[in-house]
Length: 352
Ligand code: GLY
Image 1 (cartoon, rainbow, N blue to C red):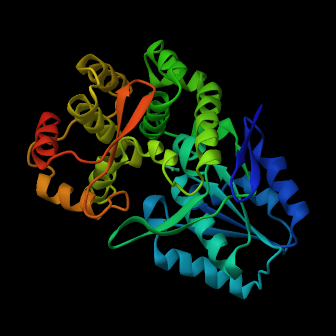
Image 2 (image 1 turned 120 degrees about the vertical axis):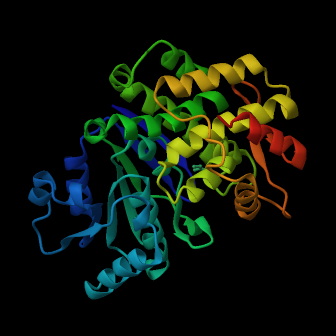
């Protein structure tokens, strides 16, 4: 078991490798009323039903995936909290992937101007990224995560057994965030992943990889909670990745879109930051080894559409698209003035 502290508007701990059941029971003992938010396959689990016995403990089922991060679902949860008369000392627990923790955190941030919430991430992406750091949000027609709040959970419990419920595809999608973390800060993550050949082998190192990734995220978030500057390094691969994700209509997993975004950002780093082409090749091979996409089919995504989405992204400033790139593995830097020609040429290099 690892315990990693995060310092934000409150100090909290991420319990890695802990059992989620006693964790939930301890929350029940701390708050009078608790609402658990979870997608159907988790909400229907017998283990969860055994825990939720008291009339003060409620379970609300959300839609699967990114679809739950919308206004209608948030409103449904707010209405439920209203009907059940949830007060300032009551709490919400999110049990699910990143979409569930983003939604639950956002609802907790806005109900009565903020009630306690706890995260039990069940996906690799949730454990290493979404549930850590207090970014909460829902999506709107204009884009991903445009309505939200920085609002930390009281604590996070990452129980590795949830990862057994993930398909290899979903596990690999989370691995894209792990690989991102290796490239921006912890090269030992890359060494470990270089030494294994399959998702099955990576699964054996899940505890170590989650602990390493959370440790990096905790340091970054603790020094720049509201993303003044440093926290932006966590967005490596995300500027292009978010545009691809949105354009795919969320058919691609977040991590799959980020994987293509990492490759794009690495190629862009060659011309803008002197990143070596052999390092780009290594990054692409590492992603591909775990079945992650790194290229786009010609005509699948039009450059003009992706450019428009990136310009509208919250990471852009004054219409200028900003990227996180790399000078070398472990040395992230900002790319703020790439010309249209350079961006177009980079896009063309990732076309199959
Ligand atoms: N997912 C990037 C961040 O939490 O800042």
